[in-house]
Amino acid sequence: MEFNDIAVYLLQCLNMALGNSIQGETSYTNSFEILVKEDGVFFIPRLPAAYVIDSDLYEKIYMIISVALYPNFTLLKQTSIYLVPVETDDYHIQRALFFPWKKGISSRLVISDIEEFSANMVNERIPIMQNLNIEYNRVTSIAIAGSTGSGKSYMLTYLLNMLKGISDLIIVDPKFDSPSRWAKYHQIPVIYPSPSRAKSDFVSEVNASLSECLKTIHSRQSELFKDPTIKFRHLTIVIDEVLALSEGVNKNIKEAFFSLLSQISLLGRATRVHLLLVSQRFDHNAIPVSVREQVSVVIQVGNINNRSAQFLFPDLNVEGIVIPTGKGTGLIRVIDSEEPYQVLPLLCPTFYTKGDYHA
Picture (tube, one colour):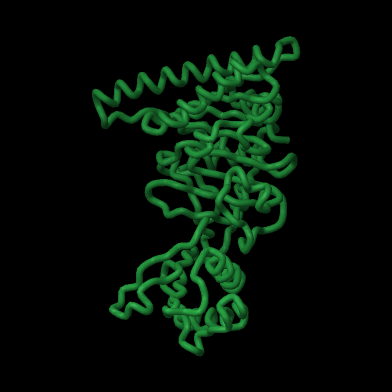
């Protein structure tokens, strides 16, 4: 379908569906027009108009054209109105509401041999879905949230497999569960609790490990000061069920844990030190707000609604996003210096392995 044909089709959809939202004005009365380009859809209102151009209008238009374009295109959901200038001398139509898109819809990766697949990873690019990769060099921290049984542990195991060849790993597993089995299979040390130890003692051990990571950051910063071109091997601190780690411990130990996480998240990017955090939710009891704000890859799996997404997607209205059904589905947001802000429906990869660590 040509872009002109798409524009005509979307005009028909908007004329029929907007209704009272724009006081009955339509494209037939020259109240607005639609322009479709390679990077997305432009809703161009003709001003002055009888309707208010605000976030509510933007959301209504998004919901209409998101469904209308499915499955040929996926609109990238924005947290607020996206207003762009239009190159014209006619001041009545010099601005537009912009709806960026990606061609097609999210498609799940199916990997027959995860060991071979991870060994062939190119340029530290971690495949997440068809046509979506994470450039690990640009990542500060990764957060994965979801309720029990949503598939977050499976997604964590996938990322561990992809990271083990490019990053040193420090794994903290408060539940002594699948990350510990994975670490044992790959002969990687893991910090886990013991029935004979108090929880505060366990978190103190975690704090000691985080403190060593912070020393590594400071040491690398000194080396970068002498030689800005130096490249370090990635170091990733993996904490499963971080909420279980931070609840019910001595106040001073928890504050130290939060302080260390904050410093690592703020200082780690330039020195290639990353956080990979997993939790059922990421409220202020799980991690400090400063850590959450530094996360550049956000993954929410399981049931998606405004309530479940409120911590990792605080400014996002999830209505209108077409999310596939099934296990290991949800939302993903990737923010880096090269890619535009985008929130996409997620289908976590399906992978097979010779090991039994995720059984």
